[in-house]
Structure formats: C-alpha cells, structure tokens
Image 1 (cartoon, rainbow, N blue to C red):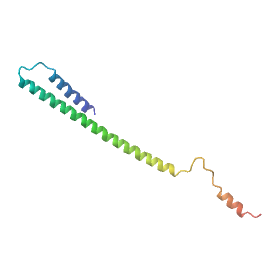
Image 2 (cartoon, one colour):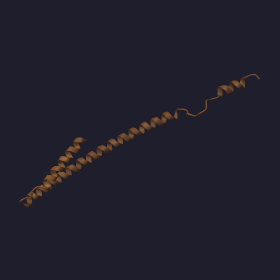
Image 3 (cartoon, rainbow, N blue to C red):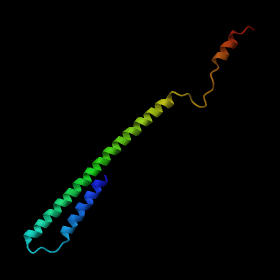
Length: 101
C-alpha cells in the first residue's frame, strides 16, 4: 500500500511539474507536455483505483471473517443453558414419588 501511495505521489508531482513549467516556445511542445501530464494523471488515477479495489477486497475478507466468528460464537452460546435457569428437580421428584408413605 505504501508503494502505491508513493508512486501516485511521484506521478502527481511529475504531472504538476510538467503542467506548471516554463511556457513552451511552440504549440507542439505545449501539446506534448499536456499529453504527458494527462498520461501521468491517468496513471495516478489507475493506481488510486487499484488501491481502492485492494482495500475493498480486504474489507470483504474482514467482514466474512467477522461473520464467521459471530456465527460460531452464537452457535456455542445456543448450546449452553441460560445463566438463570433453575436446576433440574426431576431426580428429587422421582425419589419423592417412589417413597413409601
């Protein structure tokens, strides 16, 4: 990511240098400078788009991992008894029913 940003910065500075340089002596040179500046801007835009796509992909992977983690956590929680659930009295009730009176 740092390389993408550094390359984009170099391209932008080069394009600015060409656009803000001395006035050309003829129209051909001026047009050539504009064409180069446009090419540099196009390259910088392409690099920015590539960086955005990489970030979007990273976000998608992160979201998928979070979803998987949450699903697993929820599945584990579903198998545990509630914290406030009363203890089962089935054994005590059975013993009392079978006791001689």
